[in-house]
Amino acid sequence: MSAKQLFETVLDKLVDSIFTKADYISDPVEGDGDIIRILRHTNEQSTMAGMGSANERAVADMKTFLELQKRLHVQTAMGDIQRKYQADPYGWRDIDIAAVAAQLVAAQDATILYGGQALRADDKNMIDCLRKHADKVEIRIREKMSDALLSKARSILRDFADTSAVPEDEDKLIDCIQAKLEETQEHCQSLMHDHFTGLAPEFPYPGKSIVEDGLHIIGEILADRADGEAFLRAFNANGDKLLDFAEDMEPVDGFFPNQQRLFDGAVETLALMDRESFYLGDNEEAQQVIADMKGILRDPQPYRRVSELPGLTKKLSAMHGEIVRSKQNELLSSIDGAVEELKEFANNQEPYQQAANLAIAGTEHKIASVKGRVHSAKAAGVIDTLRMQFKDLIEEGYQAVDAAVDEARAKAEREIRLKRELTEREAGAVPAEARVSPKPASSQPAAASNDASQGMPQSGRGVSQSGQVTRVIVAEKSAEAAPKPLKRKVLRRDEAFDRAVLTNEAEVDAYLASVRKALLEALVENDSVRLS
Image (cartoon, rainbow, N blue to C red; front, top):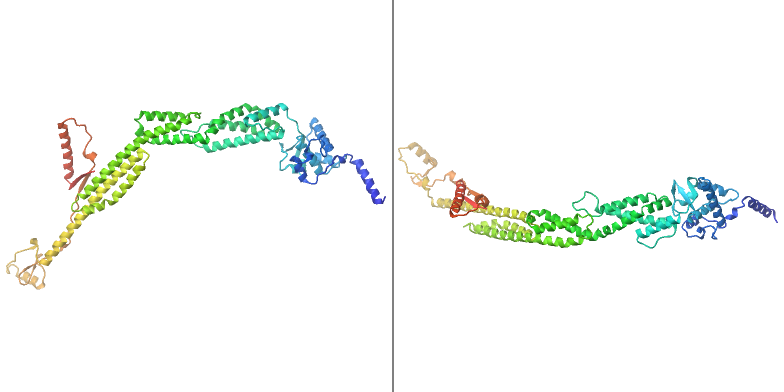
């Protein structure tokens, strides 16, 4: 045996005599990846001690130590575990120590706490807590939850989630419960945001209080999610409330979105009827249907009666539709009659019919547009608004005819006047009003001689040197103003004809006399009166 071999043999015996428990690590790990696989239950090392697992004696030793620490009520940092098992009689590597601790965590025999919060086995910070930050975390033996606690939690979860697939594993059970509660919480929050946020409408959706109660219950349970046992105790304590909530939520979930569409349709119909209340006020049947619909919409639990809403809505819409159609037909008939009257009025403007008809062309186009909107109107109020627009357009048409006729008449008179003047010029005649008898020569000899010599008119008259009377062009004649347009008075029929109830011939005569008097008074300062 060489000196080197002898030295190694002695050294091995020395190590064996000092680190007597080094061989507890029968399956050393090669890196953090092995530890991650242990924590994820993908490596055979993650099985429980005593079941033929790798590093079985090491796991049992560490578990025994943690149990002793618990009995002594001593808090143990992971750093303490690292230092203990790196020293004699162990001499383990820090990564193997972390792997053994990971086996205990994966087997639910130990718990790692960071900042007082228990870490899940698959927590992304678990490796650092077992090695780099070992002095900042606590490791303690994990107390097994009672079978009664777990059994009750499984039973509640089975009913609450309406499933038979309930985990037997403690951690998986907690994860499953937490996931279901968080899913339900998110669903309730979505309902609150989408349907119950903001100012309450006249007809709010049903179920708001149920959703709010559910959020409160779930929030209280999830507040203890950091501690598995406390979480399950809170879950079991609120089990009856959770199951009642789940039962109450069934019709709420059924309401959105199927019944919601029927509900919204009824609300929209009532909103229209509210705007049309003036036209439905005397219809007792319609008022009863409206009352029935409001009763359903205001019911805090209307789920069984929502199916009645389409029938009531259809019935109410039919009654309202009859009113709309009646008003449509009435207004369309009035439009046709008024347009014919306007056309007749234009055709009667002899001899200016052409100008009058051209003047109403634009009005006819506007009225045709109003007529189209009447056909498509869905509300009686809209039709009454269109009626006012139509009346304004008809009046606009009459005014256009009056203006066009005045302009045509003025143009015709100007042409006649101009033609007469041209004719008179060509004939060399002096208008009668411009003719004068020649004065004796002795009356104004000097002036006459001067005027004749200058060829200037005398006193607005022209006299030739031969003494013949010639045509005089008067400056004011060419600048004569155009004739003023006719002054018209427009009276509304309801202004000229007061509302009255006449019962005999005398009352009729008196009424007509008052109308005649009003019309004659209107003519005193006007050329004509037109009833609109």
